[in-house]
Image 1: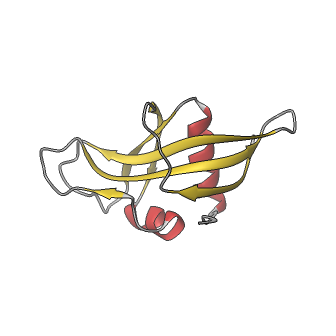
Image 2: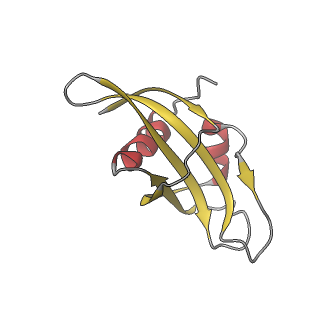
Length: 110
């Protein structure tokens, strides 16, 4: 599976945690832009989130679209140091999508 392109601010309703990655807020912001959601309330479960829809080429050479998100879960603040960011999506492919975007420093089409 290879990510061809993606755009941010996608509808990820109904998705769930698929994995995690260790990185910093600044790296995510440099690659994905401003987060689509932030909330500094220490009682909120999610303090910061990026949502995206990716165009991927699967192992059979077919193009498909997948949603993914990366978010800070139950920190009570928006973390700036390297920490665990949760990855959400509708399948395990979300983990691969986020890892490829970070490793290849892919920027959004949007």
